[in-house]
Length: 153
Image: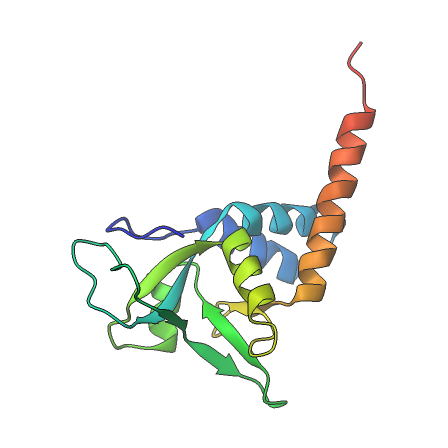
């Protein structure tokens, strides 16, 4: 997780999401997985204490804002940038920036209350579930194995 005044933007992730939506090829899938893995996502939160100078006080709790689908399953809501966040809420939101790995851990720790996280729920709508997280890991392992099997002569 990062906290600071630097705005979160993910133009490469947005581009890879759009490419995958338009053409579900293996190349676009791998590019999407790579971009998701290296991105920081804006995540609306509720912090139990006042944040001073960008520091969350010791003992404060952080609660994640969620959205619920028709099956009453909750997902942590995340955004690639402020423009996407504003599609969800025009009100000022307290946000923290989390990596894919951060969110993966949070979902797995809270699996009884959330089913995953969703990126840009009012545009591209990418839902990341534990099953998809496992698939991402398998695909990354496949890529690593293939890259490791080539020898430069």
